[in-house]
Length: 298
Length: 159
Image 1 (cartoon, each protein chain N blue to C red):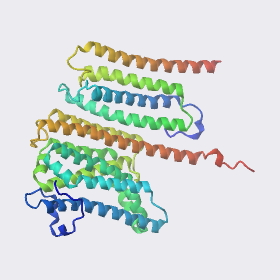
Image 2: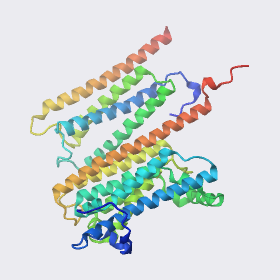
Image 3: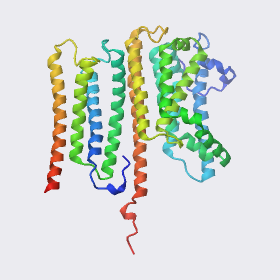
Image 4: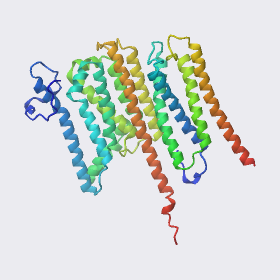
């Protein structure tokens, strides 16, 4: 990665976008480096600008300010997402199991935490016209969304996808075929975001189950993730099927998967129970107002 | 959880025990992970002797410990905030959680499921005995605290 400059390469825009995911070829190394940065820079610019537009629109529509903490969460999530598709990480992911695992953790677990805690649906609802707000509410309340966003179902889609990836030939296919690799990465991001949203989403969801069911879904998903990591460790010389990774490297990647999953689980558990704690406090204040606020004077 | 304002100031003993037992389980699991897996390097991540069932139970337990300790802390904080935490019950809960996890790990994980052993290349018997005795003592401390707390309350009600 010599000569890599994190610049929004303007002249590179004449190059077809598909080459942004191409492998390094001898010769055009410098232009490749610039083209490679096009995707992460575009991700940051597009998602941060969309956020700014929505925050402004919401303030115009409701007159209310948007939370700084939620904006920080959004920017953090976007930066993690951009890091996952940045040239150093993609090159590392192509080189072997450890890089792949780091990309998997960033796309499927860490970036979604920031994106979900930013309450994007709340922001979009606030910035929408009443008609669109109603349409969005109908979609959110529809049967497919209700089923897919149930924490147990979402966890199954998320971690189940990992079992399919690592225990079938899909992983080897994703290493060899660029479009399969793109689809796998998109699944990481979307399924990870869906599960995170289902468990700790601060957004309104008409049918979101209570804290116990969500905690249970978290234990099941994180447990299944840890089991898969140990299966990969135990069979490092033969799994993922057809990948041909060095067994020692695969064991290291599996260990990162295990402990990296713990970090994500810890973050989700704190977000889940902290939200419960705050909500319980609000309910209490409504039911029994603070004594100082009571009208004692005649 | 949730609790109405009516039972304010009436100590929630059962909740105090359960919340801190969850913390105790998580604390002992953390000690196991940090001291025996990472610092001493005695325990192995995987020693080649585990069945699929053992791996599955280990994964679920591992995930459950983390959620237990975080949930336990927030539940504990909520009990304190509502002024219904029963301190004696809470201490009993901590010891019950510590001991229960240690004993479960020593008997079920190490011996029945054979996930990994305490240490490798040594005579295991003294290690296993120490491990499980510590677990049993912690558990008994919890039971004694709980029983004494009950006894003290019953005496107060009679007197």
